[in-house]
Length: 504
Image (tube, rainbow, N blue to C red):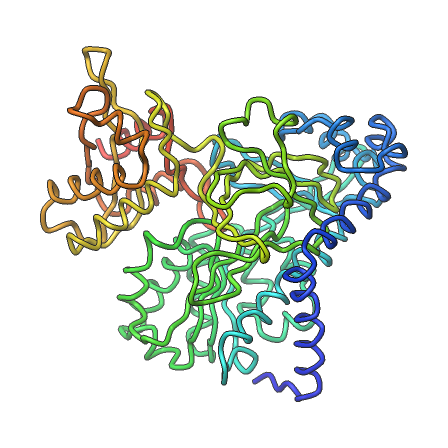
């Protein structure tokens, strides 16, 4: 059992809360400092010289000189770094690449990760997560028990010119985990980094079941699989196995579709759920108030933010705004400049602000994960809200889902086809579809207009698929475990057809 002295605890909380205070009370000043620090670091790099960083004296100047970039734009630079060239995008040596899950393109991406990003962004975000949680919960046992974290794996790649470490960002973090995190994390590194996901589940389940687990950390879908494995093996509820379990820190996918399943496994009404927004590219936001489901944007973690209104995404640079000019409730594509040398990088996530001063956000989806075949502008947040409402009102429990357009033979009308895997099927599937449809119309005016009298979009088509189908899809696509997730919304039918091939 970890024993934390009062003085150590007091020092830790004071330091972290001072940083959180800066984010809340001086957000613009904090971001300006981060911006100029990053520009100074970039001046000596090849990128900085090509884009005249020595002449940058304002954000506006920066926008004029540096275009908004995508992964594909940066790919040639990333390949050169893999081949041993340095000082291209960042002024320190890059020896790590985070392998992303590739939800929007289906292909994995390899994002450079600097040692500064690990220490000043990811690990700092982890410390802030702990501090924010402890600020919310009195008499917590968080520091007096163990945390289960579900991570990916990594491997060393070598070529004629260079060697580098590649893996999920979670695996890179485990490899260089600071001592304070090692004290509470289980399982040990040798189990966490097992590459075969099915073997990993077994080893983790066997190792953690007899430990005093007080917290969980990971992607909801994969953590759920581990909890169910443990519960089934022990023939006990999770709270019987770990009576002191008190919180699940979750991220990667929206938690709403999984909430009922967690409530079934963990019946303790005092169990807490806290969302974090971290990705291969950085640690961006944390739910700092457990009574509210939005997250505080982290402004002092080596990341400078810009935001592009979603309807202006095709003319990115012209319409990008900083925190000063964001509007509450508007959807934005997020653009980041980071301490790994990602300059004006469009990460692919969309967010909306729920408040300013402090700046708090919700993740609304992905810039490429939406359905807009007839102008309905359906985004992930709409879909998750609607299916959650339908599940609640029909006593259903969801496992996973994906949505694609279904085109009718007349060539003029479409429907949205929902492939849904249920833990518990709805009592009435037609009612489920009606509630989902009605909720979408209530929260999305574009969708409602297209649904008028079935003239453009017909009623949603719900297809129930057998349990375990999505797991088979992940396995077939070599995407088991870690940070992998299925694309919720697609403008094409590629994923839907792959799933139909599985269930034939």
